Image (cartoon, helix red, strand yellow):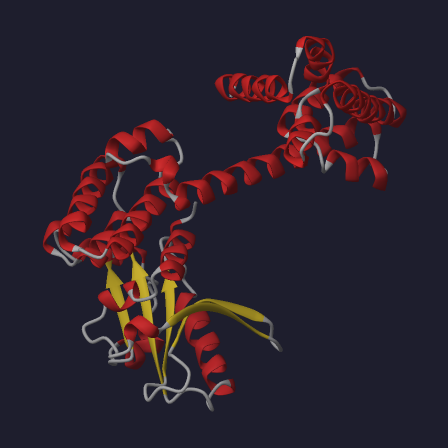
Length: 347
């Protein structure tokens, strides 16, 4: 995941983190809401906008830009978009502030002269993460932010320390869990090559029990599934020509297992009819197997039917033989779970 996306995800979960970076925070910092806004005519989006609570005395809007790659027109874009948004929302806000977060000064735009007055003002704050100091000496919120720019060796120790500090310094269980989930968010999204077991060992917690892991895992699965479908669609198009609307829809509904089967089968395809035949065989086999299972075991729960619809053609053929020895629905459930574990081991 790009670090700017990671920052915005953190700000969504805890908007007050931004104000830990500033010398002076608004009195109602905890009530600010993080958002991204779209402006029409001209059309553009501002990814990081911190909105003050409605109806309060404080009416200052904060614009935030996270920049981990050099952009020689960053300030042109940032100030242009921010001023236009402030102009159009002037009735809502009395003042504005801008925060730009860099990993180091070397990432900053080179030509800053045209914006010297703004950059020297108390409205614009440039944050260089490598100059904030030792994470252990900083407030917990700043430690979280520094964790986003740490390498794997540094992050391992920093994450352990932050978890320990959260457990020691925060007595409210809900707040403590929120901080720990932010730490997990950083580790899961920043170091995608680290296995679940390794992250658990690093943090000494059961990662699979936390909501953020479930969200991250699901997001990763969906992203991988979308990439697999896109790749397979390109391969099919090269092999048999542009897919029909019906075939495209069916391919778009295939599971990981079924996409793998189709990837092997398409090597033998010569025409669109071969793809249609393969898809029809899968659908017919699913219907046939489900019908036999209902006849033997009775009505199936929706979740069980969904699992059957996701297994591969070869697994359907195995199930067609195995179900004959199932005395109850529990045996079917156990069989499906065993297939899922086998797939996970192979992947």
